[in-house]
Structure formats: structure tokens, C-alpha cells
Length: 230
Image (cartoon, one colour):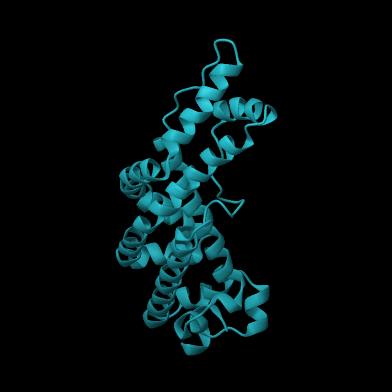
């Protein structure tokens, strides 16, 4: 049984996790249970890392993969304003949206923790035997609604505190003064930022999943090492 769960450093580098744990899943109940426990620990570590990374200052703003950019229609107006010398106003709005997302990110921690605790043996088995994004897709299906619900008031409050409305109005006023009858769309920025913040979380979780599947250095506990290889 133990042999089924131990994978050499070299093998772990060259094989997908699916191949590594197939034997354990097909083996004894104890082996499969250990594999499932290892997966849960991996997901607890991975989601915790993702939330921590995005909760930091510049967690969203400083990461090109998750940085929240202006929505399309607003970007069109912003491009005109930047060319007219209003780069700072555009940057201030982008900054404030990302700061709001960073402030909301900690709300995800208990949601992910509960999703891991509620994971059934069958859920774990499917993820272990699934493709390279199986865990990320699991979290999307189980937590997207809860995350949106939790993030919405947090983003709204944060956007008020960091001055999103003020930054938006400054841009709108500049644009209206430059373009005949020019008016920026009154987009629901709260909803937009909330959705982008949630999307960014899943991007980071996907990155963490990839690390644990392919990088032995990311397996930071003994259980992870025993299930997924040293």
C-alpha cells in the first residue's frame, strides 16, 4: 500500500499527477483514503496561498494575470483621455478598482475552507483522476455563487473607501468637456469589479493547482509529499 503512494522525485517531475495516483485510487480503501486526504490538504494549501497572494497590496494590481483593467466601453473613453494628458486620472481609477478587489479577497478564505471540508470521497476521486484543472473547476462549481455574494458588499464598501466613484467622476467630467455630447457609460463598476475579482481568484487557484501537480517544491507537507511524490 505504501509503495503505491510513494513516487520518486524523478517520476514526479515526468508524470502528471493523474498517473501518480491512479494506482492508489485503484488499490485498497486505505490507499484511496490517503490519496483523498492528500488532495484535500493540497487544496487547502493551494486556496490559502491564492487568497493570501491576492489580499496583499498589489495582489491584483501587480499581477498581469489578474489585474483588473477598465471595461471595454470605458477603456475607449480612457484611451482618448490619456492622449489628452489625463493619464493620472485613468491610472487612479484602475488603481482604485484593484485596491477594492484586494480588500475583498480575504472573504474567500472561509468559503474555500468549507468547500474543502465538504468535499466527498467521490469528489476527491474524480479530481485525482481528472485533468490538470479538475480541482479549479470543482471550486468554480461549488463556490462561485458564494464568492460573488460575499464579495459584492465588500467590493462596494471598499470602492467607496478607496474613491472609485470619485475617480470615475473625474474621468467622466474630463471626457464630457473634451468630446461634444461625450458621456461615459454609467457602467455598474461594483458588479464588474466583483466579477473580475472572483475570476482572478480562480486564475490563482489554477496556478496553485499546477504547482502542486508538477512541482515537487510546492508539496510543503509530509502528507503531500507521500501522496504526490517528494
